Length: 99
Image 1 (cartoon, rainbow, N blue to C red):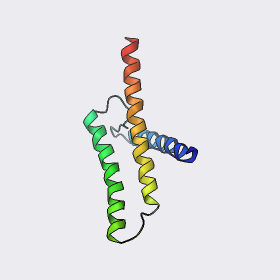
Image 2 (image 1 turned 135 degrees about the horizontal axis):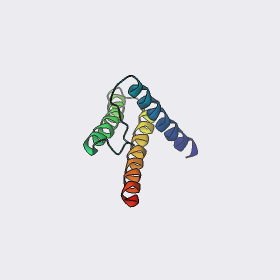
Image 3 (image 1 turned 45 degrees about the horizontal axis):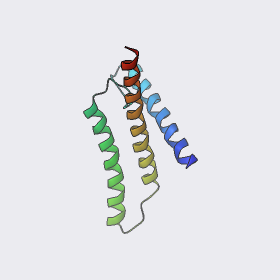
Image 4 (image 1 turned 90 degrees about the vertical axis):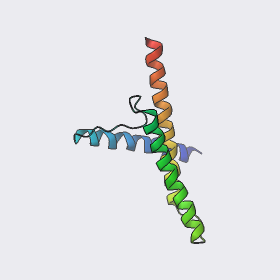
């Protein structure tokens, strides 16, 4: 379990680094951890990640093979997006409580 959790944390850090790089390039870029990202956009991100998991599983079934290592990568990415969304909820709640 520790390795999986560590990988999710590493993925969250990668997401934030990528976001900062995109902003530095002049793009408006948010992660699911940003309370300013609309809820439906967060759902779209999670759905896209879930779709990649589904694709790997469907491809594996069609090819009569076990899912490849990409399945774990996608699961970690999905988990990291879920954690990010929870972070946004926590941040939003902290702002409400401080008001």
